[in-house]
Image (tube, rainbow, N blue to C red):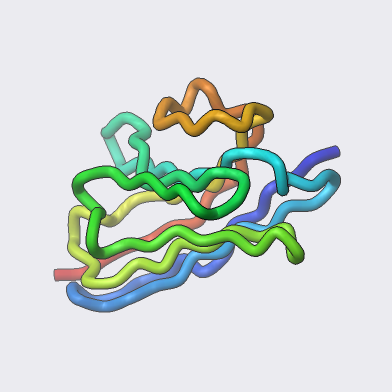
Length: 124
């Protein structure tokens, strides 16, 4: 059974950095789009970043563009999110997700596999 497991969350001060990782098991996602989403308390889930199957096309929410970098390692079946210059408004539970399709999407409803999430908290 396919499984996605996030790690790397934690508490950091404003301006700090964190690196989130997503490890896939049970199947390979090398031919699939993968992405990161987040959900803050009392808010709806929102798109953060997505990467195509080759790793050559990357998409970001405007709120994180220039600060976050998404990457993937197909050989290890993993995906990462490097988060720099963190702000208190980045505080949320971050979820790793994957699509069966090779088409990139920023709509969470179009993703088929989800991890359990990892908490990121940024103090002011």
